[in-house]
Amino acid sequence: MRELISIDDLSAQDLADVLDLATQFAEVQKRDMPKVPALRGRTVVLAFFEDSTRTRTSFDIAARRLSADVVNFSAGASSLKKGESLRDTIETITAMGVDAIVVRHASSGVPTAISGWTDAAVVNAGDGWHQHPTQALLDSFTIRDHFGSLEGKRIALVGDILHSRVARSNAAAFSKLGAEVVVVAPKTLLPSTLDGWPVTVETNLDAVIGDLDVAYFLRIQKERMGSGLLPSDREYRTRYGLTVERAARLADDALIMHPGPMNRGVEIDPEVADDPRAVVLGQVANGVPVRMAVLYSVLGPGRFDHEDELEAVAAS
Ligand code: NCD
Image (tube, rainbow, N blue to C red; front, side):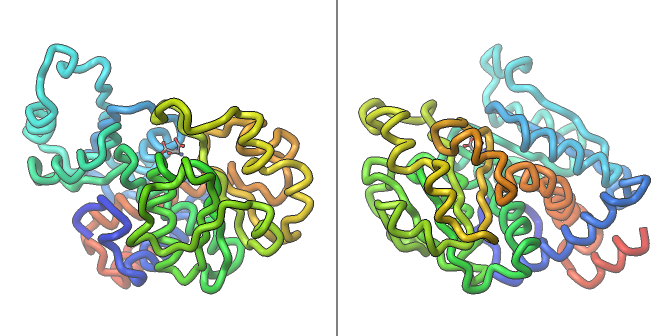
């Protein structure tokens, strides 16, 4: 793997390989010294042109635990403010000899464009409504960790599908790994076509909630929304939120997931966010070993030669 832009670029085997590697790195996390020298001498730039708490922090921690040098580039404090173009900015960063650029941007397609301007490995940390592949990987890791496999699992992605890069990446990853994915949303929050989405569609959450293995709630993304798509937070909660009553109908061993940041009381009632079946913080924790696996896959010596990588990690 030279870069990671979209889940669509990965086969089911590639996904399984990254998850296996992440399992090894999760073991490293349990050591007293949760750090390996695997990427010593490599430089990773975190170029976040859009806000982030979880993704940025966990890429930062992941790179440091692999002993890479990390540079945080803040768009707000850069010469972009003086009108420098994105391309000049990336070429400037590249000229300093960086090995990987982890990029988040509000516009779809920016990581692909950047990949054409630099020899560094590009990792997409979320681009517009398009893709958020490391989120899909860490969510797949979380589900696999709980059930052993995604094969045959019934997973609902609930809510703001239209504006969600998480929905696009997760639907693709979950279905490649053998899950049955249903998207549940009001018509106004569904894309005009779901051609190419490996999913079925349901507008009534109550019709499916009883037989789900995973109920995955998406954030209502108001910053990306035109007006008139949502009647009100209250009505949304009534029809699509995980209320206490709905949670009671979910299977005892089902998982409740959310990528964060959560709007408590809209997508998930506050009491339910702390339900033992909710693994929202587990998702966050898994972000570190999964992003270590991604950085190692694009920068490590094996460049995704699975056996070599596992041996190298075990030996380090
Ligand atoms: C998501 C994002 O920014 O795409 N958050 C995240 O990375 N955990 C989801 C969101 O903002 O709704």
